[in-house]
Structures are given as C-alpha cells and as structure tokens.
Image (cartoon, rainbow over all chains, first blue to last red; front, side, top):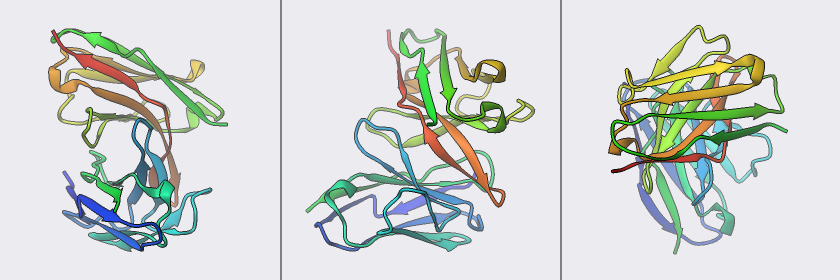
Length: 107
Length: 121
C-alpha cells in the first residue's frame, strides 16, 4: 500500500499568512494526488486534483504542486474560512489512501 | 446539481449487520465509479471500497475485506454498502463519493453528508 505522510499535523497561523502543507508518498505516484478541505461536521471538499489543478469554484489563493513523491498545498493569504483540516489522497492505485490530515488553527 | 444522500446508519451490536444506501441525483450515475469513505469520530479519512460504473471491478480496504460488500443499482441511481460482522472499530461516519477523471487521473469531486454507524453493545 502507498503511505502518505503529511506535515505538519497541526499548524497555527494568522489571517493573511502564507501556509504550506506537505504530503510525501512512500513511492512515486506521478501526479495522481488530490487535496481536500474538511470543516467540523462537514463532508470533505475537493480543492485540488491531479496535484495542481484547481477545482472549479475554489479560490485562487489555493494552489498545489509536486509530482512523484513530494507534493505541496499552499494557501496564500489565509482567510478566516480556511481554518480547517486538510487531507491529501493518492489515486495511483488501490487502496486509495489518505494522508493523516493537517489541522490549520487560528493563532 | 449533483447530490449524494446517504442513509441507513444507526446503532448496531458487535457482530451485527447494517446496509447503507446512497441516493444519487443530478448526474448520469451509470457513468461514474463510486466509493465509500469513512471517518471515525475525531479521526482521519479512510477509504473503504470502490465500484466501477458497470460493477465489473470492485476494490476493498483490507480492514473490511470479507465483511463488507459494495454494490450499485444503476437503474435506481443508488449505491450500497452491506456491512456484516461489525466491530467497534467500524464506528464512523460513512460518506459516499463520486469519482471523476481527467486525463486518466481520478479524484472524488462530490461527497454526501455522511451517515453515522455506531457499533456498541
């Protein structure tokens, strides 16, 4: 199985900050990676697919990059509504594993 | 508008069974691979199972293999998860998700609101 390791697991940031979350795969997955945002009590929401493609309707302050084993989700100028937990997921093969999540909280 | 609505969750004793349903609307259900993803309270996301559009290919997480069965009824736009031999560690919110593709790269673009399964005596 492909393991995905996110870092950090938790980060505290202020409105307006630039935030970077990393997802590392245990083996190469090309660009078969998606990023999701989840708020408490809600279903996950797709932000980025194919490692760097912004889902329709998602603000442009979100961006994704990477290929192979190392991936990054960046939020430029963090907004109040961005405080949430973020997950990466690989689609290179089954099982479709997720990273353990990164919780972004208000400093 | 794409909608996925799960139902069938509830309280069940260890060793018991439960059948979850996901009613899909707003898209051509028979075109898409579908999946179940779960989340134990306060924990991360765990992929459970996937089924391709014609049910030809089915995949399970090791943690549910042999106990859970995913199925679909394309005529009725419905996805199912039959859960048998339930354990306390199966307690979770269960989400159905639609799989979409671009350039052969998949992702889950729509999710239901989730249904809670609690396994406890």
